Image 1 (cartoon, rainbow, N blue to C red):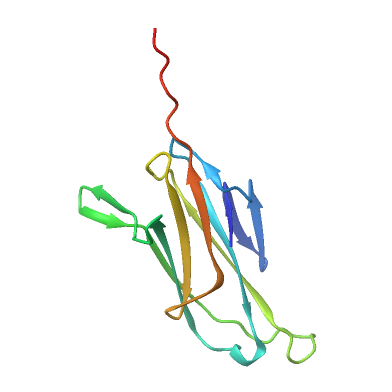
Image 2 (image 1 turned 90 degrees about the vertical axis):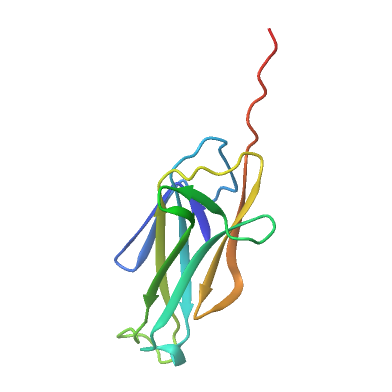
Length: 141
């Protein structure tokens, strides 16, 4: 997983703009989570479900007040991989996933983690943490 300003999947590859940051803000800005899932050959042609959650420093889902009530940031999807033609048997396949977000109003001076889950299971390396800068102090006149 990699945090970026923007990401896209095309032709089986991840295209990443402004990738690799871990500090942002304090003002809300667009962002993306770029994910590369390695699928072993014995998992080919098997459907998998993924979920992406934004947690706070205490491991709790980040919650926002909206006109529809309190909401969390959760994204879900599905993927499967087939055996690529022309490669040796047993070769794993990469499945790229790009999730883009508009500006998210996060608390300044706080720590957050994007948590990626496949088939209900968190895997090693399946998270990406970042910190929002504190608000600048106003100078006394």
